[in-house]
Length: 477
Picture 1 (tube, rainbow, N blue to C red):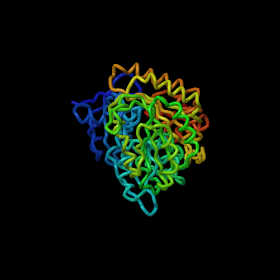
Picture 2 (cartoon, rainbow, N blue to C red):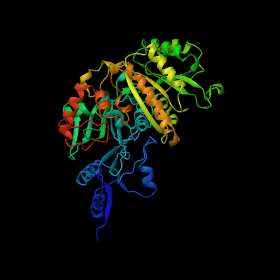
Picture 3 (tube, rainbow, N blue to C red):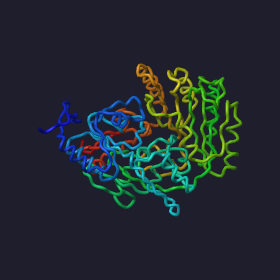
Picture 4 (spheres, rainbow, N blue to C red):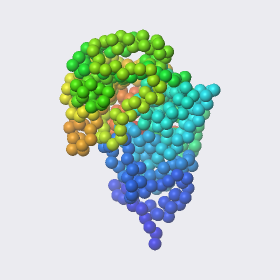
């Protein structure tokens, strides 16, 4: 008697069955491992960074090779299964896992090879930024890549990717030289400036809409020691401190990148006990040029006001990349709202300060990412990423642990996000978007680029096989 596995079709409201014999045949094509519902391995493999995401896929394929990935795409298409693609699983949207479909998990694919002479690197899509940086650091090299080292390189790069080196060296996608891509029909393509140049344009900011990237080739830059750390100020003078920071940030060279965080100080041993549990303002900085010059550039910032603590020191770049990892562990419930803004106006500063007065969680806060520099000097039409003219990305970060608080925490984040809309230049960073609907995706790219992206989608994924993402539909749909 034939045995069937019951799964829910993404295109119907009912469950459907897949023959066990077909699943067994599929398993024999996989060099990695297949995980099915039931048991601890499944319960662990289905989890992603955002604890709000609780989805149960029918099949998880942990790919050991590109051939596994191609087999998984074909199996999913033959059996009408929704596809989720997992690299680092670090996004707030939770699109790395699905209900009733197949998760193509790239996390076992961690191959990396650095060419010190050419200053480039080939890196597979399962790597996190920490794993990537560990290898490039051996050669005194690095490329831009986020602010948390547990972030996967794949999703970060496909959505643009800004981090501590971006004002000097651009976005992660700006440093991409080539990528290997598996398309919806199972083809394996190399995309670069000469081969499939249209696809190469689209994956630099267009997310996973056009295929599954299996490996990346990046250019690298000499980076070893940086002058980096944090200046923490009391929240009592946050308005004046933000105004000073705004003027300071407008005058600094590309080598200096900074991120301001409005937060509640945790009971960390390096913080004075008097500030534990109190609202505060943290200015994180990273200077990637000559350290002596960096000391002079940072003097005015370090001398301003009465910082609670100054933690800025010369250190290895990778050490700085990892330092915030304990503040962003997996499992917490997360809900974000984000906008690009052209300036930190007095009115915006007042809005942010007021918003923090009612923050409902000690883990929630507001982040201001200073952009411009090399990011803004790259031609806007050279990649799919948009809004290179933004001066700051403002990210409202809701984070908590108790599911019973969901409504309250989400309401605060939404309310602050809505208050930010009038300061927005009209778009948001793709990697900071949650499940916010088609219009928000469209605004992230702008009308002209969105039209070009839908046309590209029609070419490479006309039936929208890869739709569990910040989705760009095919042009005809």
